[in-house]
Length: 207
Image (cartoon, rainbow, N blue to C red; front, side, top):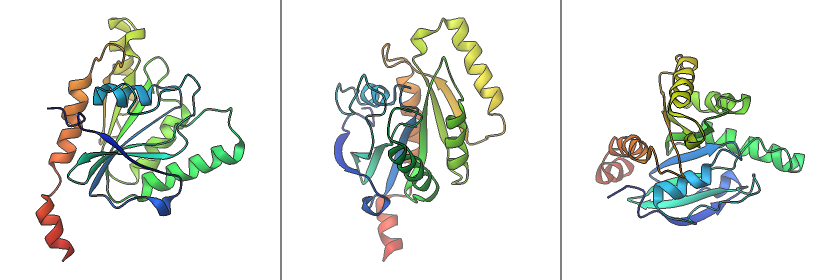
């Protein structure tokens, strides 16, 4: 069974002080129009687990989805959409940066980029935010169905080449529409969770 199949909404927060206590989290982040919510729904095989809007920038909070065993998926606010008040946009950037750099239970990041427009300035900024945390990043080049197979291969090779100095970053093609690349994502994320110490070991360390 997919590790995403039992995902259910847990809570939403808008400030670091309200983050719940968790054992492990894998976060989704990406530009507001990159298809982040669609990717979450596709991986969970659900239609409305994460809200999909025709208006980019609707995810304005940090949304938690429980997987079991105190493990969570986290949907972070989309970035880069200009048609929001400056104060709201500044709050998003600060919230994202602080979360990515300081959240101890964050074990890995799924960074969603439109395969037709990868590695924009804000994408690179997110990579730098998270690079300081020393944890892995897996990039999903979304909307791959919009490209020919030849162009997919070219984009994939280009992104890999440009990120050669980021040893903790891996990348793949992904399409929510065609459900292409789902197995690869599951294998990566399952590996992150499987590397965690058993729950009993964590409990003993806290005693």
